[in-house]
Amino acid sequence: MKAADFSYHEATNIQDAINIKAKDEEAVILAGGQSLLPALNMRLSSPSCLIDISKISGLDDINIEGDCLFIGALATHSHVMNNELVFKQMPCLIDILKMVAHPAIRNKGTHGGSIAYGDPAAELPALAVATNAEIIVSGQNGDRSIRAKDFYLGLFETAINQDEIVIGIKYPLLKKGQTILFDEVCRRHGDYAMAGLIASVIVSNDKVNDLNLVFFATGDKPDIAPQTAKLFLETGYDYTKLKKSLSSEIDFAGDLNSSSEMKLHLATVLIKNVLKKLEA
Amino acid sequence: MTANNTVNISFTVNGEKFDNVNVPSRQHLADYLRSQGFTGTHLGCEQGACGACTIEMDGKAVRSCLVLASQANGSNLKTVEGFDDEIMEQVKQSFLKHNAFQCGFCSPGMLMTTKEILSNKKKLTRDEIRSEISGNYCRCTGYQSIVDAIEECINEIN
Image (cartoon, rainbow over all chains, first blue to last red; front, side, top):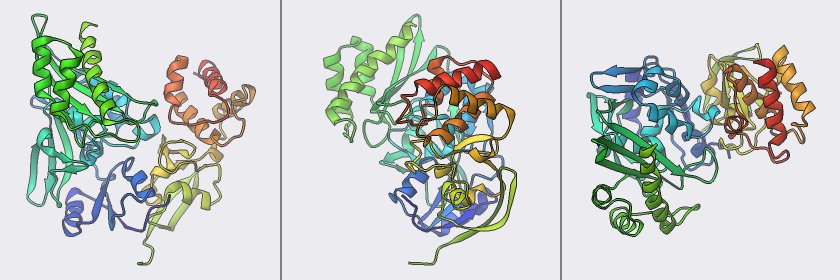
């Protein structure tokens, strides 16, 4: 349970971090470290070098940029949960973060870290996909933004290039009638979910007009289910039909806690549970 | 195998200064603290699940097994040994009174978490207390007595 040897570099600014990362393909960025350190301690990962970006100033801002809520990569989960702009513009994010681990871990874990790590069972990547967020990365050729749905490529695999670092996430401000709904099933409080769902819903004239379903802890990355969402809008909640649709749309991958069949069942039931919240 | 990398860092623990100490870059903070005699910081799982190694870093509760010693450069750390103020004395008495200590393995982490709960200065229901301590495992008490103790602390101190 001790990490293998690596060199440690405390980056003084973004350019410094980018330069080191560009040169060493085995170097890994350390932000809050709340997913990375367990992986290092268990030797699931043994990078040559850790580039600690946590002391770079100005990367934890939260502000409104045009029609987006911008969250700096180094904003900790605790910081985001206690931020007034988040409370006003995206209150669902606070409820979602309450399900991320425990207070002491949320004090250190960062927003950008969770987005960049790309754990398929994590909530934030699914939220980014469900809300059509943009992930802003900085590299040797300057900054670029990547749509969340194009960012996640596979298991812990993202569209970040070797010389790039995530510097922030831009969530479009909610439209009129738009709500983000969320639920997950887990064995213990703070654990990774066995299956979870984030739904973006637009209601007009008391009717659901637009539905975007994004599941997490179901496959190798956030799973979008457009066919199933369409089916729900047409026929309402029908367990058998929705389950069939989900099984054709998502490649469910079982893990130690739950088989793929169980995840399929949970995902189907989550659609009912999540949309029931609309009535409240 | 290459030689172990080290990092030169400075920080304080319970007000005591550590200047220009060399730490192996791969060593986590809990191991470093224990090597310096701060053995009140316990190690259970070393993967962030059990909470026994919880300490205070710059005023916030953190898992010292999930922080590298090298990341503590420039920080103010507080371990259970540094609990010497009036409030924490009261917390310890509450824990004693309600039998919330038992084997004692989880206690340093539980006390640290209680400290953070009290610093938020909010009234909490018993369910909310359970949620706050959900990241600290206790295998003796069944949590009942710990929740009793924390509830009393919130009512008396805040």
